[in-house]
Amino acid sequence: MTRRVVTTARAGEDIASAVDAYVSEGAADVALDLVDELEKLRGLLAEFPSLGSARLAIELGIAEIRSAPLGRFPYVAIYTDDSDAVRIHRVLHTRRDLPREFASD
Image 1 (cartoon, rainbow, N blue to C red):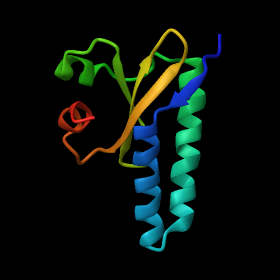
Image 2: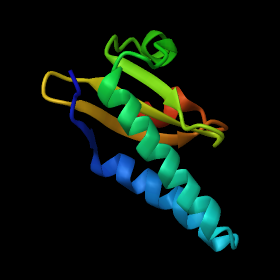
Image 3: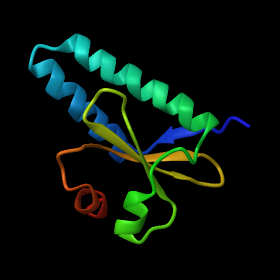
């Protein structure tokens, strides 16, 4: 069964920030590739919502949290498989302190 995948406002802000960073560096084509990778991940999560890692669930003590990388990009999508949809909560750069960044949401 294919699930609906939604993005929270906070994740939308994360994505916009990442795209803006690439565009400001003169890499608009890379920004578009990032968006494409996110769309690919959304498709995968729709088909296989439990494919992501539970590492953050253990670190945060929130059993529902999963994370999945965005292809060749140094970003990770943090999501939950809720009853109504797969919900992407954040899209964070892997150099960040992911548990701290997510908890500050």
